[in-house]
Amino acid sequence: MSLELGYCTNVHAGPDLKSTKANLENHALRVKKSFSPGGPMGIGLWLAAPAAASLQDGSALEEFRDWLNEHGLHPFTLNGFPYGNFHQEVVKHDVYHPTWMDDKRLTYTLHLVHALDQLLAPGSEGSISTLPIAWGSPRPSPEMLDHAADNLVTVARQLA
Image (cartoon, rainbow, N blue to C red; front, side, top):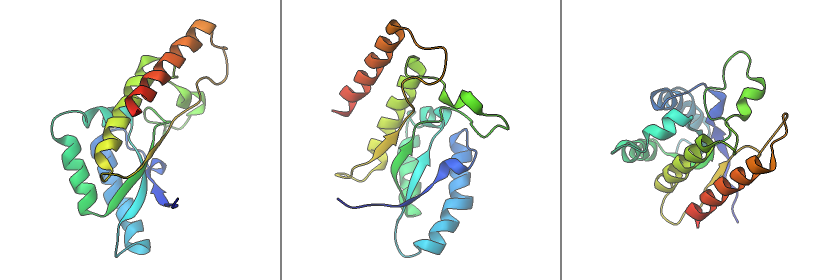
């Protein structure tokens, strides 16, 4: 098993693909120039839900993959915890929404699965981080937890 280190892009606000790409150009490429000028550099890529959704349309994902490859950026992991813009002044508990009890979380994660599958080189492995099933209060009902479990099973089946 090899260990890959990377620059995590969720330190920069980027609620859409245009902002994400600008952050990669302005920050990740500068880091790459300093630490991995002669080869690819791993990145932990954060795609907010609107950015992930936009990669499902037409050739956008292929173009983004080609751009990443051209610049030597290797997204081996996706940060799927923050759904939307979590760079507001007060984030607090909003970062935990939508939860796995909401189908928006399922759709977002499936978009990330599709994107990562296309961004990785054939035969490569990757990962996607996500949030806990539930956090804080109110406590979810058994029915809500059942729905969260169904959503997680849907993702697991997609990965199989």
